[in-house]
Length: 228
Image (cartoon, rainbow, N blue to C red; front, side, top):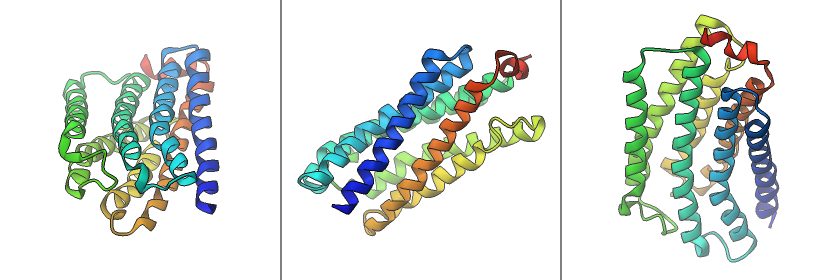
């Protein structure tokens, strides 16, 4: 019961924040970048809800294992939406900093995303089982991790050049999200307590959404300054 209460309260605040922030930026954003940040935040919250809502239901009712199929399907949907999240974040990077002549990098990001989604679609993932095979858990996250590394490098590189404060901590937030997530992928099957790392991992994503809100709050002239 304490776990059910704690997780449910946390999930309500997290999903409420991500969805509200996303819709606010989508509806009220006065430039394409702000609306793109809103779409990114909304996809984050909407995708995670497919996993977190069934998880809360399971904790309050018959338990996690008895609801393995719903949890697995939610995890599958979240895997797809998180891939889209990073594609949008990459697009924000290109547009915000006015980066041109990066067809190779763009192609790499799209290729990694398609490989990741293709791997997620394989039946060997056994999404409807309570415990999915570790091998495919690692395999489908390899291209995802490479996408994360690319995001870290490109945002860090642009900050060193521009010293612009909006995305100053994006490399750290992305690095923390993967740092907390990968141990869960590798060890949660044998040590369920490792799953608690999903809380700081989620907070890292909240931090990313807050950076998107920082972009939304800037005036149109400031937002487009890097695109000149």
